[in-house]
Amino acid sequence: QVQLVESGGGLVQAGGSLRLSCAASGTIFRVNVMGWYRQAPGKQRELVATITTGGSTNSADSVKGRFTISRDNAKNTVYLQMNSLKPEDTAVYYCNARLLPTSAPYEFLYWGQGTQVTVSS
Image (cartoon, rainbow, N blue to C red):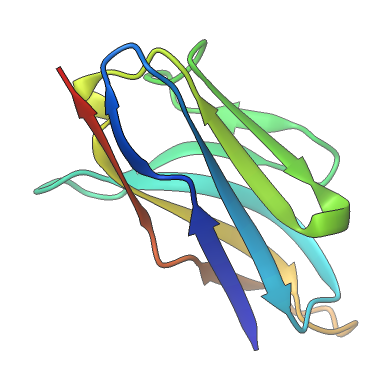
C-alpha cells in the first residue's frame, strides 16, 4: 500500500509565502516523476510543476519565477516553495507520484488527499 501525505497548506496574505511538502510512504521500489497540481472551485485540476528523479523540472507559466519544486529522493518527498502568492493561487493543491511499488516494471500513479491554500487580498 502506498500513501502520499501532503502538509503545509493554509491561509496567507497576498505577497506571502508557503511551503508544501508531500511524502510518499509504504511499499515503494522506486519513485519516478513527482508533481504538484491544483484545483480551484469550479475549475479543472491543472498542472503546477513536476520534477524527475534527476531534478529536471517543468512548471506552468502562471507560477514561473514564483514557485519552485524540489525533492529529496532519499525521503521520497517533494516540496513546493510558493513565493509572491496571489489570490488567484487559491486552490486545493494535490501532489502525485509515478512509482514502482516493486521491482516489476509496472509504474502506477498515486495522488495525495490535497491541501488547501488560500491567499487573501
